[in-house]
Image 1 (cartoon, rainbow, N blue to C red):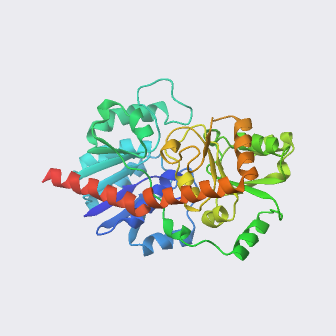
Image 2: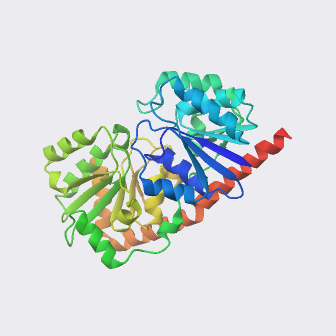
Length: 379
């Protein structure tokens, strides 16, 4: 079985991480990824090397993505590789890939939807696919053999015209979280982040966009400052909201406690060096970073939105708060700071959830079952 994954970027947010994790954990198959730098940075050489060493072939189409040359090059690649399965990621690729897959007579075409964006509804959030992409997705949905949704929340947003849809939760490479980092390594990482002894380190991971709502976390940082010792908020990610978030922190008097770290290759180590994980998103298709934080054994405070409640059960393996409410977020953070035993219990339960339900191997096995079923239906 030959599988070709297609997306724009190779590094960036949850789509990119899910695709690479799936490709590198798929066994008994020839796997390739086609990518074209679009809105995120070029991947570092060590990442490219790790992907190829895992047995995945990489095909880079030069930018720009939005050019007449891109579909021609993609069509040429599909015709050359003759994949059994064409697995599409991202709204624009979902439309274009479905069309090219049918033209090239690919036996099985599957698209993974990561966002709860109904193609025909007018009241879409501003971070959903652009209207023309949603219209194109609706028009090309019938060319797909199967649509997979990363959560039941996303699946519920799909119109009936989508056809067959399956929920496959994202998985995380848990091997990096099997063993805890040493106390020395943890302290060194905290010092690198400018975290003093006795400080509480809050960590968030995600693109700096309005959807991720890190302004809410900064507001909570300012509110919690009044009732506890010094907290530091470190966010791994980059985006157009950086300057705005820096201004918010300055206005609230917590600029010295905010660390916007940009894209990082050491997220696992940063998580394992933290005291709490915060995810204040206004919407979330699934919440892959929440699973990563859970795997690190961190107490988690997250918004009760989207697919997050499919990972976190309030009071069992984390705390859920209303989105866009800095006071509620601050109160939940304060509750865990004041009750270390509760924090440890929730962190332990979160880690158990990650290892029992959200491994990369489980995700890959679920997709392999879908691939095999699609191909057997063709016979």
